[in-house]
Amino acid sequence: CASASTGAFCLPPNIAAPEASPPAPIMACRAALHFALAAIAGSAKLRGVSMDGLAPFDCFTGTGADYVGLEDKTATGRACKNWVTEGSFANLGNNNYCRNPQGNKEKPWCFTMDPAVEWEFCEVPECADGGALPAAWKAPTGAKSEEAASAGPCKEAASTDPGFKVFLAGRACMDHRGDTWWLITNNKTRSSDPAECKAKCSELPGTEFFTYFAKTTECGCYRECIPLDQNVTINEPTVYEMK
Image (tube, rainbow, N blue to C red; front, side, top):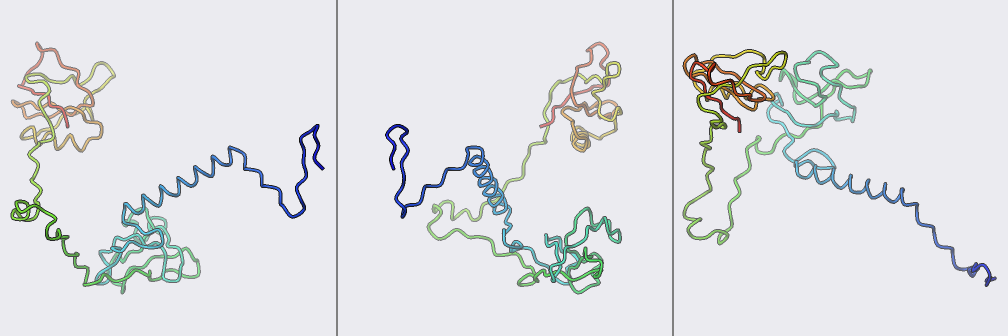
């Protein structure tokens, strides 16, 4: 049944016609979904979370009063109710994880979303060995050089970096110009030294610079530093840049 004029042809009865490939947009969506799922699985593994259940360290000791794991359903499979929505223990935060807030129940529990069941225990395992930390990993014999092995375990040295550096000595930042303010909170505070000033400014989002006035112990935190004119600069200031 071939047609020389059109190029059409007929397949034998015992051979099925090949399936047409999906349109390009569908293929692109399938590929995107595949990579998204792979990324989610990879991210979970990096966090130590099993895609099939709780992480190995998600367990409780005693009555679970200090349990802060990620279980969010009861032993019968009922979904836990959000603690803030339920209201009795809103201080636990905006989540629905199993907890034992007062420690007066046998183990972690939660209020349920089932109107017929107010609360239930959660299926959280008890920690093995009473929650003792696992033994520290030890390098196999021969994995280190003799010099490194004789030095013992690695020890992290405490950082000596104060987290700031001098930006302008003997200068100060301008608080504002008209309605434009660079001084965060529009007020200065008092600090005993630049380190304490830095600590206070670290608590204010957006701080990039701070000025410490040695003569008055004033501390100003700034989102941007526009240097004040030298002829109106007083009280022995120094501008520091946050790291």
